[in-house]
Length: 583
Image (cartoon, rainbow, N blue to C red; front, side, top):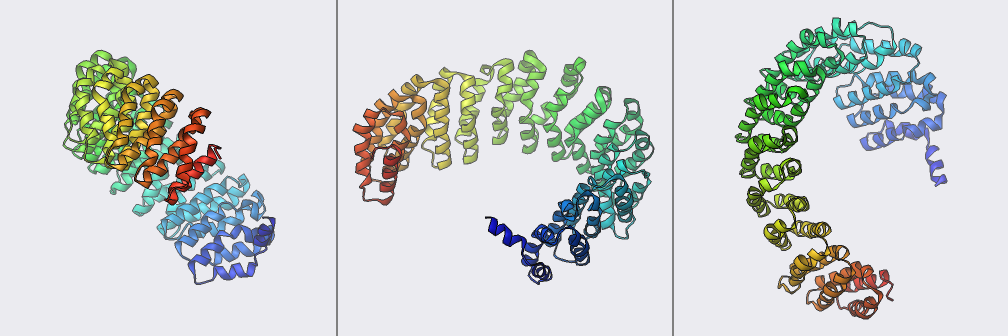
């Protein structure tokens, strides 16, 4: 290995520089990725005086080459001689921060932010701050968008003013977008007086920009700014803008408000939430655009949890629940599905009586919804309700919903309900399960989709772990073993898969007395696939059996299979013999 490393680091520099000029993009890309090797071979001084100027002069290439270069330079500090010389990396990165391709610019800004931390305060002021100012006043929007990402790392460590950011706001939409997306993080590093005097006016301007793509980014900044301001300033400085955003003519802006609602709620505090955010949330839940309603529906549980405790219940019952009731029968399935994934969480907030009186009818309606995702989301969150009122209240409506999902034409829906079966079984109890759901679980074992048969096998194992070996012996094992005589060889193989999964949970006695004879008998199956799965099953259950059964019953069968006419059967039988040390 050492030799290989040595060869790599002595790779001729001239050849690499030729490769950087080669017509083949892949060659150029490879040589950029080896830049650290070149720099190591050159040493810190030649890297600074030869390699970096060469790279700065030749920045004109395919975007993927430039992207790799921008990334490499962010890790170059030690290769140019450490923090003392880190400013040497600024010229090539400055050029990269002005190219047309956004991905390259973003990576160059990321590397600049990274190396800014390695500048001493003096170097930052002498080298880095002028770079930011050059970018901010550049002729092209590309450089000005990059500058927006550098203000927040530069400002805390230099004695400059905030004003330089202001220029970015009377600019092209691309620059305003960049400014809006970085405004929040910049505000966090400013003194409060500047936030009030400068940032708020910029924020207000961006939040009423003519482009909705700028306005929606201002919503994100709103969260950061609201957390910085004292409570008494929020009402005058932030709330007018937030109210305006929640009623914006563009659905994308309203969607952003809905998506960030919980964060906004925490940032503005309980009093403003009660007076302003509750009506705003009601409007978002009733929005004319389905995407906005779905985003708001997703936040229902979180919003209710974060309401002030002293009047939480009254707010939910009076203001939120009427909107939620309407959403249960929404025309859009994404809205209903979003609500179904969180609505069960309201039961823990509202308590037993309210859940039975007000929420239970909604859950029952959703369990009958024509959209499988809605029914599935309700069933997958049953544990919340079980804690509050017990699942029996739902069991009569649960059953038809479960049966319908279990037989859904889409196999992924069937798969999802199988995965919830152990949870349901634990909540409904063994008697209800045996009476109502056992036949479903057995039916999945002969589903025409393999993924369902596999999941059904795994499901049986979890059920046995939950209900115990005695239950398995009386209820599951006889049915599984009965499938060994099925005319369809796939079903006979499912018997073997089930035995593999159940043997450990059922223990030695059931495995030896009931399962082993069936496996041994199947070694004479006409189908080679079944026979080699017999060998695999014997290998799997072998460690559970006692040595007497292994020697007298398993060994002769495996030896017979080891001389089978089929190659695969031979291979798996020999593997089982060696693993079980029966040779």
